[in-house]
Image (cartoon, rainbow, N blue to C red; front, side, top):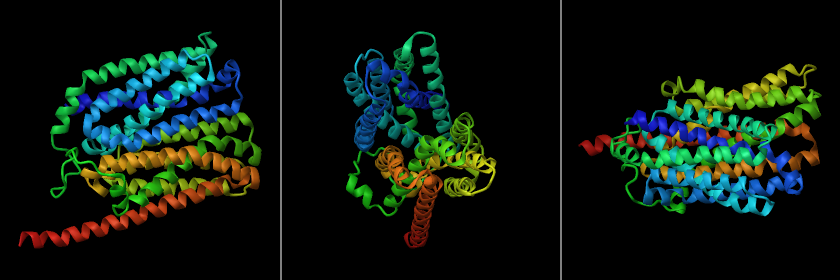
Length: 409
């Protein structure tokens, strides 16, 4: 039962990644055909990001009411409808309209799926699943490229991926009984005899979740990581060309290697994630990113070290996101995990949405040389917050161990 549903969830994660690169890949053609400025892409992505933040915060209520399986199926269906809507849009305002269900569907399914996997599957699967998300995100630019070069246009790419999402939606609705059966079975890990089971029907209000010791710390850490990742993806190539004198082709290739490092690193991390644990993965990931950022920062006469540092930063980034999500039930309890993961998704989208433009504004004032400094600050912030959380969780475990003999007596 676990294996069959897991295969469906793997397909869902590939599907999650497919739409994420479409706007960026197709916008050079889309804005020209629609007759709008290049900068209007920011409006579109902000609407999508706003929808994901809202639905992430509402995900716990939806999941308690409908269940993770139905929330996932409905959310993927909304995304499919939005993609088909994009494919038939002949004006920018129509894209903005369809961007609303696009974002709402993405946020809810992300939070619901991540929490479900964190509760029911081992750490290795969380890493591999997010690696499969990277596969989907890497495939969609090629679909867009093929559609444009073959005469189908950018709308053909949206239509193709929309059809894929429709097929997955049907598959998810057909698999709803599997979700229910697996949910009734005891989780193979994260079992805490003093903890309530997940999905106990009790809503955890936002204020209550935020007051749980350590939640604010992990939100800041997650915000910092996602800000780091999105800033590196958007600005690394520009920094290498403008500040290091690297050729545009070489810079683009190594910027893509940062993404490939994340995807490949998550696949490799899955083989030892269960043995070393989420905390070690988070700590080691941040430290590896720090090493890569230092290599980028070093004022050496050769660019080889900086380019290698970008790849190392990508490999270090790989396990951080999956490990933070997977550790949530252990750090804060199964009863609270859905609410907290929803807030974590909102923090993640906020960091990924607002920090790259902030860096753009700072670099316009101070210069692009601050790129590795900006990344270093985010690494230090993420590492410091995650380590403080580890100390809080360790103290909580010590107190629980001290209470156990008293209960027994």
